[in-house]
Amino acid sequence: VPELPEVEVVRRGLERWVSGRTLSDVEVHHPRAIRRHTPGAQDFRDRLIGTTLSAPARRGKYLWLPADGPTGQGLAIIAHLGMSGQLLVVDPETPPERHLRVRLAFADGGRDLRFIDQRTFGGLFLDDLDAEGLPLQLAHISRDPLDSLFDDERWASAVRAKRTGIKRALLDQTSISGIGNIYADESLWRAKLHGERPTAALTRPVLRGLLQHIRDVLGEALAQGGTSFDSLYVNVNGESGYFDRSLAAYGQEGRPCQRCGAAIRRESFMNRSSFSCPHCQPRPRAAQSS
DNA sequence: CGTAGATCCTGTTAGC
DNA sequence: TGCTAACAGGATCTAC
Image 1 (spheres, rainbow, N blue to C red):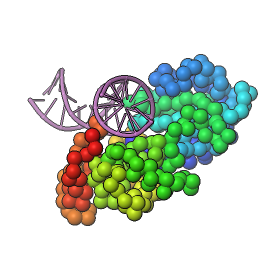
Image 2: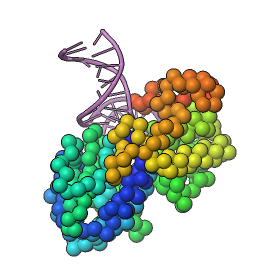
Image 3: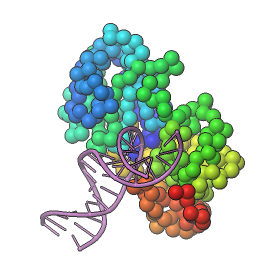
Image 4: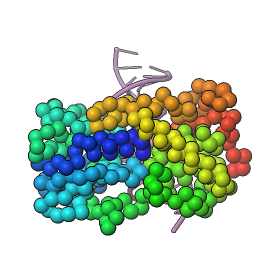
């Protein structure tokens, strides 16, 4: 499940393998993969062929490659991996993968960039960059906690103004981006907070502490090449990260908490699972805002 | 307007 | 053995 560390690993791979190369062909194998590119597959292809890709950027779980060339400047290919998306750099002679959605070929005849996605929640689309180099359609995505311009105190104020639980707030990409189910659970475990704790009652020191845990866990995962809990996530060379060995809460139902030994519990939340320690992360007593 | 729930999608696994 | 149901979950849409 690609979240910020996994997307950053992919971004670094693209920087090494596709920056500076010129596109010679674009094949869209599945329309759903470019559903966010409303002008359609023909336009997607026409506008990309002949462009030269430059250094990839990232915000939260989105990444994009500026694509400048004959058809103009300021265009970018934006990618979101969704649940199971992969961007692989592979030899052009490699037979099409089972879930190959988009194939980008280069004029130098070198390795393709292929978008492969089993569950089709991910996709590619084209957009113009604003004056700061951000795709227009990503204006609503917050800076992420590894961004040097992320404003800690502004985030704490925004969280305290919400009437929801802290896990929901962490998953809201318009407040803080890059966090998904895995790193939300890991951060909350480290901070000893239950995900349904009302945000309005969390103090600034508690939120500052949580933010530090978020940065720690994202940084550690990045250093280990990301998490590959369900083996669908791989870097551009098809290799898995190994942060899954370091998970303390996510996916650990029934295993002893590394701090207190209590059995990690699983609860249903937002149509997914939340993992936490029943002793270190007690449920809030009062009824939630609803 | 802010919050909450439903929805999309397919391969794997669990259970009867 | 074979079928069905549960499960994985990010972003978007809709409803209240």
